[in-house]
Length: 613
Image (cartoon, rainbow, N blue to C red; front, side, top):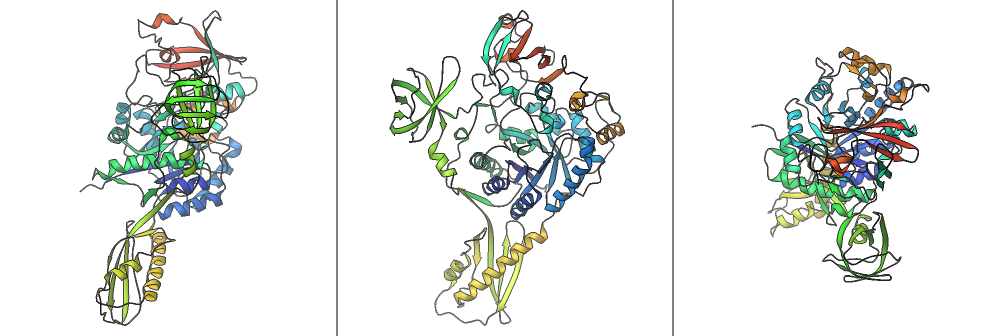
């Protein structure tokens, strides 16, 4: 019989507190930034904190992946190598990396995962990275199910895919816009998020076609309805985006996907969870109850997408929460909303104005579907009202909201003047512990009393599933308590002793699918150049971050994306019925920045070329 395929829920953690909550709420693994070289520069953590996270995660056989996924400069290589050793000794299970120069370092025996910044979107690239020894591959977010299937058929290592959270408008790692315009490198963890700004769209003569819209700001990813299809396509690790998100967000989203994946896993004997422990919650998870810009399932349904499929949030980059209902009457600070959903005092409500702006106010008092607001907002009959802040859900998430426990089976027996307790848990651990105790025949059945004593596991992570008792023997409560406590301590030690860290991958005959590398391939140090050279590729042009001051990004492609402004506005050039709605030449303007829109209709992709900054 084949071993069941492990399905992993991978959660973000900006710090150790969030990591603890992610694991407590059901994550099989967390990814967290180290003190340097993570792709979120403001979400770094010391190795002592990461060790605490590892120690807690490993209790449940959960894993900790540390992000070392920026590109590195030559003067940083030694420091990065030392950090990697520190993380290994802290207990990290794997590193998520972008810079292939790391492969040339003297490394501890630690598993490496290829970050999405490696621009992993073809089977050729996947085979290349697998042959370099990567043990898990993080796919580009833009892939269709068919493309995932093709890549899965080309490699043997697990594939990791993003299923929820913010979407980068460009192919990850193929965006130099922040570096070119602001001098802040997205590949160094300092993205200035120019995609969330307002832009004017003009024609070749400077005429404004669309004014003041967030034309590069995508909705948030939500694959909750596609989990089964993604599993069938080959995804094994389901990744939630959000290393800058707070604990409430992580709690809610992790709990939702934990329950959704468990439903699938429990109905399929060929699948199993990647960690141990069952979770109970004090709340009902609700995806649109946490920060979101509206949802899209992006390209999972196929590519190219038809006109009318909207994936951008061009009116606002702010959270719109959940649709609540429409306004039926508005008067001063009072709104009447046609909704079946309960509204609470303190809820945040939002409306989209005629010019596309999201305006909001807090609920001072709710009386059924009539709300009295703290601030006045202009509302019209028929307008959609969004709940941008869910007070009831937030109150629950701001308190302890989940418990994760390991089931354990117990068996009591008496032999040779000793009372013996055997424990077995769901992680595969087993211990046998005994204490001196002479058997005493009982006058009444004792089984339930003994089972009750064995089940008193408060303050531990364990919960009793079954207990084989000695129904005909009397055992004092103090003896049962001591035996149980000491056996549980041994079970904890058994978990520490039995756990095995993931092994590094094996290197094969690696051939880079691209013979000549440009600036968008992000080669920034001598070790990365050496890795590519050994694989038959030449770094003809270094990463833009390494350009001298005399070299300008003007005229260069600064963003490469599958998202298309023309298609989003319903004017795809491949559709003869709509192509004429916008002229062929388009530019984006924001302040002094101008970028040329270049549509490659043969492959249904878009590039932005920097014209002025």
